[in-house]
Length: 76
Image (cartoon, rainbow, N blue to C red; front, side, top):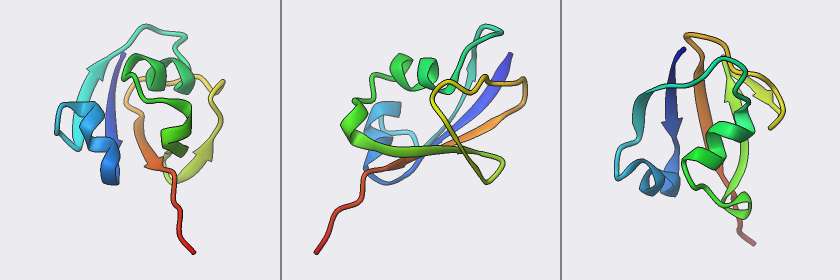
């Protein structure tokens, strides 16, 4: 399956400096599998979205998905 991944903000460092990439993944992969394969630490991202809808780590990916991963935000 082919999916597009968009890494926002400082997460682009996990895409070797690229903010957007196309990946081929195995059927049955989850959002969590994707994040783990990119070596993104749990504390570095806040959530992921597919098609503008927030998804959970155990949600399965589908061919053609566009997965956007958002960093943790802090401030005060």
